[in-house]
Length: 379
Image (cartoon, rainbow, N blue to C red):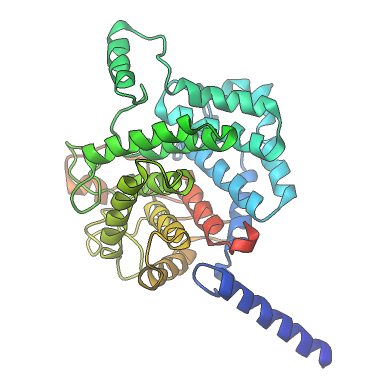
């Protein structure tokens, strides 16, 4: 009887500790971010390198959705001090140096250059200089003129002359890809040039493509607020603000844009507490989980960092995280993830997109949420 009472007391105290230190207070067991994160990391490690969406066969190289999932798994395992998972995640890199070297990315495109976050993260975990040199080369070459055709060289040089990456496209997913690799280069080197140039690039994107409501069209010729596209911008601003020194001349500009976006997102949740395939049409759209998880991640970080008012946003974050849970199956696969989507000319193009289960776009974002939800003492 005494042992039973003691166990109950210990359980009660652990819940109270989590409530005091966690972002959203105590959570039901099925929504424990540690359990969810471990399930997702093990799910990731159980599969071989994968192609985009559901394309069968081996990929030609590591694609960016896998990079983002791999990074999420590394961050989560580091925060939870799970050395076994970290070792397995590092071992996943070894074949790229030998028998599967054809899968190693090349920093020849914005979606490919983000791969450099993996060796840079591994370097910060292991101090292995090999990882450093591989990763920093990706970051450096994003701002170095490549060997290309004459016409491309002129276009690329024009961007570099403006202080921008030659990989600039003014596509909404760029601002996660560029931010992630340059932020990691800054964290690995402590050299401000990496984070400063990413921040400047972000302000140029914001001035060019952010709408007055804080959201972003998929493209100028596609005036639709597509969920995951906006998710990349939300995650990109979040990553940048988390790492950018507050004395940066760009900090307040980016923070204002971030807060404007979060305000509009808060007003456009659907009845579940998540977001639709088209963000500004919560009743007509189906719930899209990868974008929803990206928005949830951005808000979790905003609450923790003090960018967002806790009383205003904690209920939104809590409801969203709990609402995502029924979308995860027993294997740790997130369903209702929009398939890769190019720009479309009609609303129906977006509303009729196929929904995938276990796609890396969703797995990555959910891992980001799980890590962000961890109490401060586990960071």
